[in-house]
Image 1 (cartoon, rainbow, N blue to C red):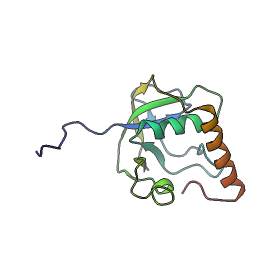
Image 2 (image 1 turned 180 degrees about the vertical axis):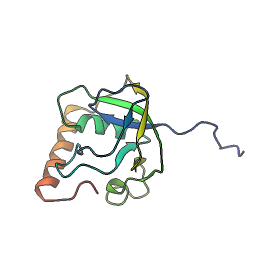
Image 3 (image 1 turned 60 degrees about the vertical axis):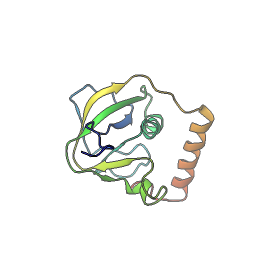
Length: 137
């Protein structure tokens, strides 16, 4: 084991408005929070809390925003919606999988983005939709 190796596994997060309990599975087949297209064949998650906060804040619905620590149950790949289109090299640590994510725990303390920054993001997403941009692959 090298001096920089870690015995700890990386943490993964999923932001949503769904009320889930430890042990439950987040599965593909639901509509994206970012488009009204067909249900997704992937589940999306991140290795940074900030990316998961965006997911929770932008999720559809009026329920409380939630962030979960999750564990992938199958193969994982970089999220091409961000890594190929916006942030080469995957600095947001954004991933997707066709297999479920197991909820490990809820993150109960996190800092929301400022309201003006959140509105800016929502406006940008609305603009992309109006332009017909394919937001989610």
